[in-house]
Image 1 (cartoon, rainbow, N blue to C red):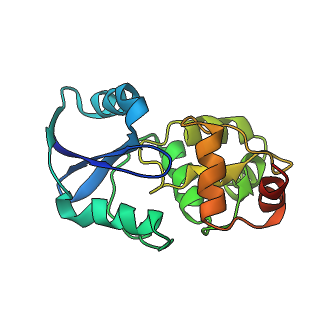
Image 2: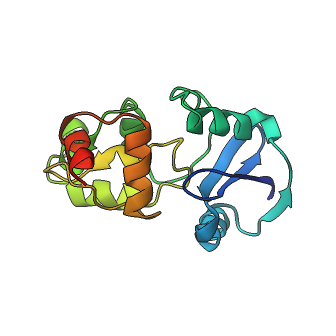
Length: 175
């Protein structure tokens, strides 16, 4: 599969976007480029990434989000692949509004599987389009900032950027 690859500078590191067919297929931080490539190859086999600037305007939308337009990524087309369960988790995570958080257990319960919080965590950790599927908005049962594969400091920054409220926001203020 041939995909265009763009790099976007951000306060929390360079972000890579892999785009093809009018959709985002991968979004990750540059220091996790092997993970991005591995995710794409697991879904598509051999992948050719070609440098391109702002394919389909997605990089501009990412810059808008980083600049404070928290709804800029809401309706971007994306193709994450995944199992049926992962897609259900990711759809539920997409429902979390900017500045809000939900726990793994809350998501599991909303899916009708209240004992599946660990499976929700695993699915969340395999999200191939971070920020588009805002996995940083998922927190531990007590609001603790756990389980962000790109690093807790990035998760903290993203939640603060979005003006997180509730237990997660209070925890951010104490740190």
